[in-house]
Length: 334
Image (spheres, rainbow, N blue to C red):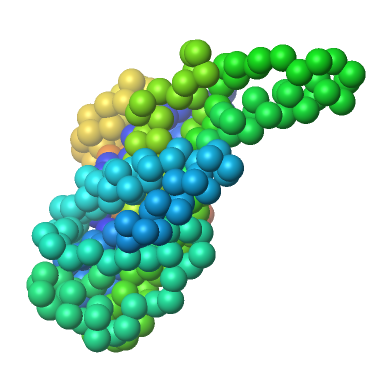
């Protein structure tokens, strides 16, 4: 999924640099996704393979007490994990998420990673559900430190020479381990495989976790997986000119003042209107400022044109360096 259309960047901080000829704006800048979905993938069928047979589930109920696992609830929580994938991914750039109505795949029911599905199985699932690729939740496992923290307090009392006494914890951490594979039957390749542990801390009363604790962490785990296919953001600084000399200096300053109150469209209108009346140096500054304004408004392509114009037509060095930055951004957004 290389054709990423980004929402207009919202400036988070604008600063004027005293009496300097420069000002700057801080805005959000995208980082490439960890994984690109191939351009020919438009539909994804999702299967939960973390489920176990009834016999294996009975055995795990006993093991859960020793490991502080939230016994018996992983089955439902894993479905919350898949629901998050649907909520975040379905419709994202035209991608369709499909859930099979009757299909059940059973895995290990533990953190032991199961063998890959055969390509015949993957191909059949995709064909039956008219999907391009298959996303499988291979493992899902949860733990809570609720019991462990109480036991730790008891041990500490004993080591300190005190008699053990009942201890009721006031907070707990819930962990969710998930392991994912994305199968591409057409190329018989695994596009992505990823394991991750998500967690949240909860305040508790009476030694009992909130009923929604595990579902919330499970949902977060699904969200965190989907974000591998989406760009993330960090703050960057963009320099622009506050003032210029010549017959249009007052209009130039007026455009600058509009940026100080986030009226970027109004600033562009003023600067564009005085471009032909400006000397060479001022024209270069105008083009640079219009480029920055367009990036703030989310128009990367237009910003690049004005940055290039700033250097190519008028020799503004800020425009040259800025154009290189915008070219990199354009490649991320493609």
